[in-house]
Image (cartoon, rainbow, N blue to C red):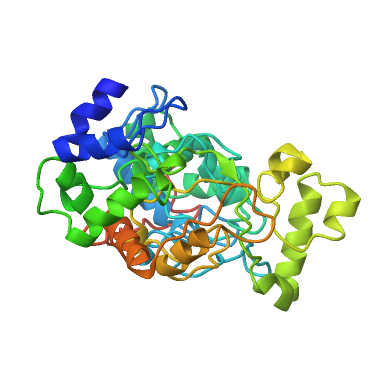
Length: 374
């Protein structure tokens, strides 16, 4: 791993900076690096035909309860593959309770959702499509919907070799498509700098890089090619104001606490998202959330698990102040205004020069029983 990381750096100056900040310290913290091709699971190999099928299914609202809440409803290309708002949409009649994370580079995570409740894109897709405040779709009903679409019947037969679409195969196709929604290093200033283009970063971004690896301490959690250690921390992020203002948010919050097995005293008094606690039920995990990648931040705001911060400047101010109330992970940084601006310039350089956009595919029609081939 160390040899690989050093080979990717491609800059003597940057090697020196990382060595000076103990990038390869006793805790095994890796420096930032260029993302390699995304890992492909052996049980879901990629083919162009599978990716194309997955793209259509990603856009297809029929993979939801009411036909309008397909994957793209909460992961829109022109909104950074999220929703562009603080809290994600809820299934009609409900309200979601967390920020919709971008699917950009989700192919690299081994823990998905803010509390790491699933470990693959193949299991993330059905969890979202079937979630009561997300897609609210029943797996068997969604499968029957697919079987009434002749074009999908043909495509599933060609891709998977089965006579009829199976819902698990649909999630495999969606996952294959999502593994193509990744950063192009040639379009990222930081990655071009690692490849040897000294002019790819502005002077401000270079100063910000030194702060990132040193005084600001960002590398301790946002490390490696993904710029995330995928661990969980309580930063004391302020509660979303919506929780206190809108009964529908309050209902969802309490319901999540209840249906995920929280004890009565917790769900009856719950006033904020408890993060990792929902998964572990350990009191010390309350308020902990998985470290988000810092790649593509320019296109994927607002930020944090509840979208509380609109700009990167607000995020840096929060960290500089040492986090919020109840924080167990941060201490004040003492950055000057100029240093904060330099750090924002570097964070911005971790994004592609332009957003990754994509046109919606044409979706096939559902057949009537009389039209459907027997």
